[in-house]
Amino acid sequence: MAPALAQDERLRGLLELVGERNAFHRARLARLGPEELPPLTKQELVEDQRRNPPFGSNLTYPLERYTQLHLTSGTTGPPLRVLDTAEDWAWWRALFAHTLSVAGVEPGDRVALAFSFGPHVQFWAAKEGLQELGALAIPLGGMTSVQRLRTIAEVEASAVMCTPTYALRLLEVALEERLEGALDPVREVICTGEPGASLPAVRSRIADGFGARCIDHAGLTEVGPFGYPCPDSGGLHVYEAEFVCEVLDEELRPAPVGARGELVLTPLRRTGFPVIRYRTGDVVLNTDERCACGADHRWLPGGIVGRADDMVVIRGMNVYPSAIEEAVRGVSGSGEFRITFYSERSGMDEVKLEVELSDGRAARRLQDTMRHGLGLRVRVVPVTPGTLPRVDGEARRVVDERVERWSPS
Ligand SMILES: [Zn+2]
Image 1 (cartoon, helix red, strand yellow):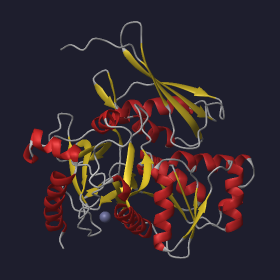
Image 2: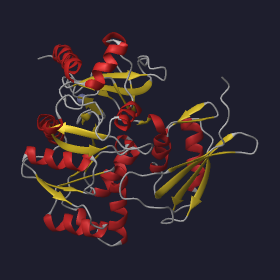
Image 3: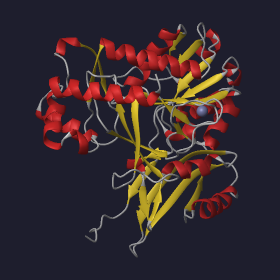
Image 4: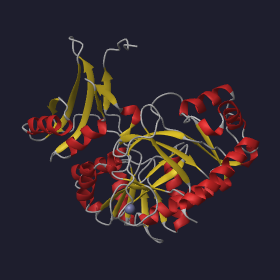
């Protein structure tokens, strides 16, 4: 079935189902009507769970039908409890298995999962997607980086899944501990959880360091594994028979072609904890171009280019930390970094970038790159390699110390 036809039919079915059985969406549809249903925020779901503890009212089926529970890993506010039925979880597994096969994983491959076992969906979906595909999942939770490197070498893992930040960390530890050879069997590094692996400079640094392909994919606890990598053109494709995909501007209108906007998704067949027009917070480039690979699924060139809530307005310019990261990773010999947004006494907002550089002269080059490439004045402070904090999962590299002001409304 063509994606558009499948979408229409499935969307009608979903709206009918939630209108009958799901208290949260029934109330929303009755209040707002399906025609002008505004995009749904995580905050609304969190608020619903606060009022109807512990699982909220966004449940299409009786509680006994649900078999999986995961928490969102948001940086702000309380986490959301997201439930899946066995059918919804089978849907996750199948989509994830497809994503992994597009990424080059084959039955019989050994894939190391460099995550902690936690309440977040990432690890569990990866593990079960691998099993669906017939690959061997090698859990590396609860291990130090050195133990992980040794395990990768001993079992001869053909692929590693982790965040892009952690991929870079693993390379650093391999160098420090003289364990570079440990990564020899790895042919693929499959990244998720941060925009990093979509940034060309980050991706090529990971690929060069591992001597492997670096591949991105995307998913979200609230919506599912929506994006698979395009092996030909880069970036991501969205499974359009499974998700209605919109890109909206800051006023929540369709973003113009060629502009960036927030990705808004409606999963069509995950019905137990459904979200309709869900604001993912992921920023993507809106294009009407079809991908040269011939896929009839929507293409997101460059994948996820940032997070909407990471965007900071500095002197009237929209600044994404991911753009600064891209500039940093383009400098050879650069290490960890930290971005601080702060206010000068004059009231002017400024950006400070502390970055580990083996060559202090690179600071000047970096400053020029950002001025010319991003049109942004940044104070670059070189620091000694190895001195900024390291993390094992998603990085927190942004500090916002700006003075809050009255908005001119
Ligand atoms: Zn493509």
